[in-house]
Length: 414
Image 1 (cartoon, one colour):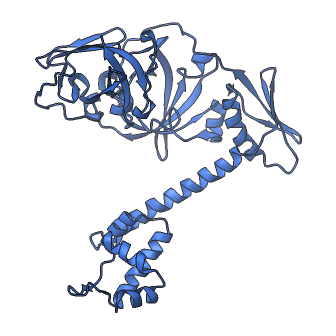
Image 2 (spheres, helix red, strand yellow):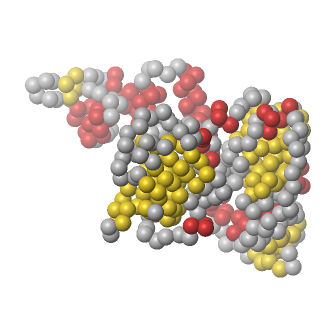
Image 3 (cartoon, helix red, strand yellow):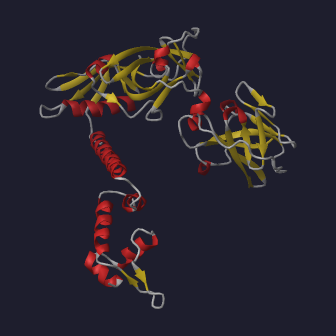
């Protein structure tokens, strides 16, 4: 049947069929090379219905193409459906949470107490969920469980301040074989009592969802500012150096769990520890190099006369689109200067360290190659009002270990 007849039989538009043809999703059975007419068979009506059903279910055209290609086994297709179902359930939960957050809460803070007014028909759990967000937004930390009565809900809170330097200490490494491996982040609890009752778990991830897994590497090897020694998960603070967060490990029927008393967030702001729950994922003896995201740093040297010489830091960008000519104080910037030598060598100055030498950092046209952390940082030069600005990728631990997009530094000629 011609495309018009086929469209009518399927209850769709000709333009939709032409789009599916271009996407190689539902191609005509035959195209007359003289007239260009597209012809379909009645058997292809079922194919269209399947495509339409998958589309209504929220699958993208690319996903649909994979499902109906015939290359996937039944178990693989089932796995795709289970993943899509999980995504929908997650979206539904997020929708419920967003709806709650949009609810206006009658909350007040006084005498280190948060008080939430309630009516008898209000659901206490829903009000507490909204309160979690509003307490944080007001720069408070909840430090007790909620108490509920007929007219109000209240909890103890502490007002957070700017980061305060903590006493510095050093604990030597002691091995703890049972913690080596990969751990899945299950969530963060405001107080330990919440963990014991498994309520009000912030399961969006560590540091707002940025970290889904943590690694305890053999010999306490550091990566992304994290390391460990027996009894302590160690995190680095700009002001306080190493912060020792106590952990305890517990065997449960469904696996091994670790509860970490976190001191590197709220405690550094005048608050109390929160509690991070991890579940053992595997016992693999990873290394920092094995888990890092690595770029191709073995690029041949090609000269670029435009960048030879010394460049001084100008500003830091989250995205290139944020670029302006406004200069930041160099004291506030971690990456201070970079020099490109004519032979392909380079020298980078960071806060309190200098990196140089052909086995550490070199360059080639369009890239600064930081060999010590396997990152190829692409640069570009923009000339604005007669002044050259070099914008270069900043591939920090967030990029190498967290899977984030790169940030950028801006430099000007020294």
